[in-house]
Image (cartoon, rainbow, N blue to C red; front, side, top):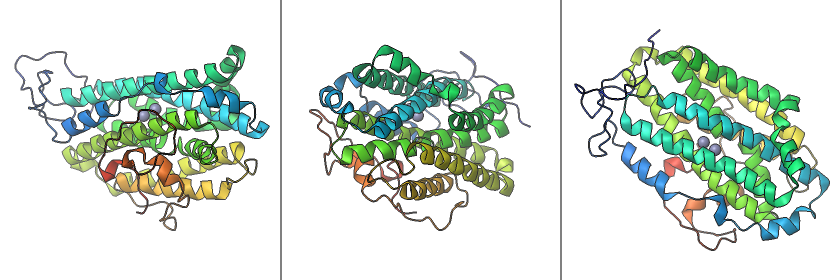
Length: 346
Ligand code: ZN
Ligand code: ZN
């Protein structure tokens, strides 16, 4: 196992441009014109360009609509927010822990922005809930993860992958932790996203869905950043690029998709008018395939090659700016490259 060591705060002998993605030599001085990876600066610009805060979102209409939702819709709404709040809280911290081991100062900078965006995501959940429900209800939602067995199982699954890395940081455990990261940021949000876009499609809770849409956009970029780090690690440690690892990725995503589906059945099931849980399941299989393809592994569900929720694309792809389903007064459309923007077909 190649143990990895934390980046030095300063190294007077080392170059500004790092000599390795981990265990490299680096002064830790950040000069964007002298960094190891050409993609780092464009990504930095894109992340800054996407800056948003919950304060921009007017919750007035959502406040009126919330009490008019069906009980099942309201319960699903709160449970999904509770789940997202947990995942984003963990993610803020995880990003920082990974960052400590990246030798390149520009990658550290990107991870700090990523972590800052997770803080904003978390803020948005508090913002939504404090607009819609009483403080006691908000507290209950933020504690769902402790008591819901289906959530518990899912969370344990990701945490195990993360903790192996934090307990024993080496190239292998970092690669595996990144796969779990892609599960968290690139799959475990997706039945929740589908639910909110379904509401928005029916002109319900559009403020909340707008926020979810911004979060979705950020998460696509986060997945892409972690995928890039993963692929660079394999490039620098080719002996780690084994068939076994590819199979592991496939296996992890198979299990993750089953867990996400179990959750989708619980919150959506056949309780939500007009949203077919089988379509959501196909959507999850499809996204598991997308993520495995990004990580250069085989697709675990080869028959799911197309996005079954065609309508969702318009909601996911805020940046295309073709349609504005959301009532935002100031939306800044930043065209981002197709690779970051989700996939319709594989
Ligand atoms: Zn997030
Ligand atoms: Zn994220």
